[in-house]
Image (tube, one colour):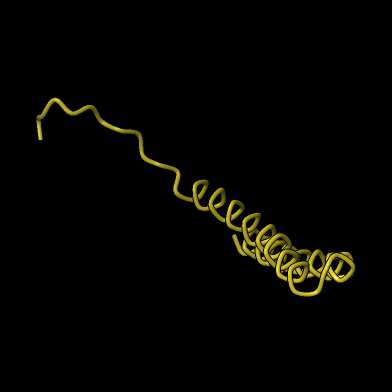
Length: 78
């Protein structure tokens, strides 16, 4: 109780959660594009990769849009 340990400020867990969510969102989008593109490129070649990149980017965009919708709903509920 009375130890020499200094008191720490309380953490802002909501802000930390938002930061982690954004980091994970970027990680998911990049993984989808980079890993998915790499697999398509290795299996089917460069031409197929160039055709697949817009589809992979669209998938990443859909994930981002869904996250945005959920974040907007969360703000609206508060």
